[in-house]
Amino acid sequence: MRYRIGLAALLIMLTVLLSSCSSTENLGVNWHGLLTQFISFGILVALLLFVAYKPITKMLDERSNKIKESIDQAEFVKQQVAKTEQMVQEQLAQARKQGQDLIAQAAQIGERLKEEARQQARQDAEAIVARAQVEIRAERDEAIDKLRGEFVEIAILAAEKVINKALDKETHRQLIQKTLEESTKLKKGA
Amino acid sequence: MPKLGLKGKLLIGAVVVIGLIVIGGMFFPVSQPTIELSPNYGGTQPAPFATLGPFYITNTFIAAWISIITLGVIFFLGTRKMKLIPKGLQNLAETVIEVLLNFVEGVAGKENGRRFFPIVATIFLFVLMNAWLSLLPVFNVIGRGGPSTEVTNNLFHTFLPSIFPNYQGFVVSVPFLRSANTDINVPLMLALVSFLCVEYWGTTSLGVRTYLGKFFRFGQLLQGMGQLFKGKAKAAISTILYGAIDAFVGALELLSEFVRIISFTFRLFGNMMGGEVLLLTIPFLICWVFPSIFYGLETFLGLIQAVIFSVLTLVFAVMAVSKPEAEHEH
Image (cartoon, rainbow over all chains, first blue to last red; front, side):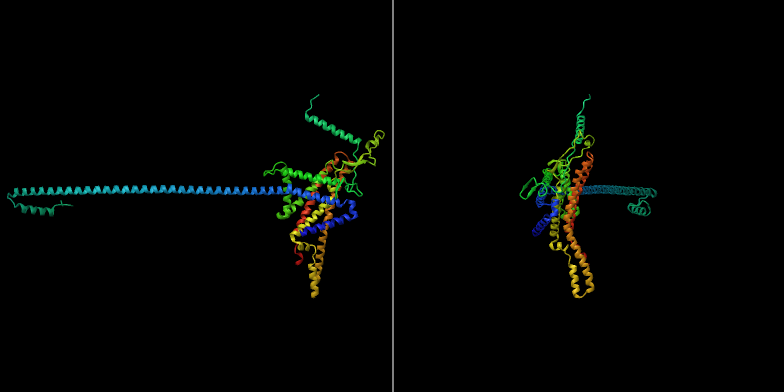
């Protein structure tokens, strides 16, 4: 406020000084005119401030803000899109990996099942073979026993006929049996 | 007879009108203008049209108010219904203001630019509008006057004096409209506004002490005196010498602040008055067509003067608010 009073005083001083010079009057310097023009200019400043400077600077600022905002928003949307895309890619990659895992797992399971089946089959086969062998052996043994019995009978009969003498049957049997046991190749369980 | 279209009729009409003007102008030469340095403020000049207390209604006052109203109407219509996407007159108003605002902000920075802008822009628009409106043909030629006291030299009188008498034209002594820039009170008022605003901005930005310190630089001189009293004569001499130069430079700057008022005033007044005299004089040397070149020149000149006035105000304002460089301290 102090400045303004000081400047107004300066203005009045200058105006009086300029108007009082007789040489300036010929140029048309006139305090009435000066005052009138001062007021006109003041009104013009106020008028333009009201109809031009304030609304237009406000509008320009508003527009530049709006543009800035739009650019920021566009940037944000762009970032968001990029982020989403990345997320989708990640999800896709994850899904792909999961799928591959599943397939691998399934293949593994299949492999195991096959292996198991193979194992089972081998075991079964071996069991069958074993059983068959046991049976065969049992039959063979039986056959050998039977054969041996008959052979003994035949041998005794043959010997009776040869020597025509009744042998102590029991003693002979034991003798032959013993011999057979020692000599024959038809061993039981061989 | 071939039927003429609207275009043809207009063309023929224009040719007839131009012909009449040319031929009529030869019979009735344009009246001599009166060139007065001062508008009608009374005293040795013609009396003003009216007086409202201390306000004198002169031809320049009317012209100034036409400029003010024109500017007001253009910007009022341009900013009446502001839209985010400008159209028509809003575009024009915004372009003008934006160009000025960008320029002022570019020179003075954002914060100071907004402070200086209303004054700088108003000076520009007012000077420009005054200069351009004064190029309208209604300026200077309509007004009070009477028959010329001097005889106008008529070309036809030279060859056929009996048929063509010398023509004593009507002389406008007090035109109703006269370019406001040619009234010295307008440039003076603008110079004073510029001066006062510069001083105001300077003092409010830097403070009275710092601002006045730009002009009253006695620090070094006093320092030198002190050294002299302490007996350091050798150091004192150079300090006093530089101090004296510094004080002188400060005084020169103070003087130049006031000289600016004069230079501002007479630059604008001289240019505008000169332009006006040129435009009034040229038709008497070579009439028709040729003066229009000078109208183009004056259009350009008005713009230049408006730019110079506002830009100088801006530059002085920027200089006033800038901190004084501590040159004398090292």
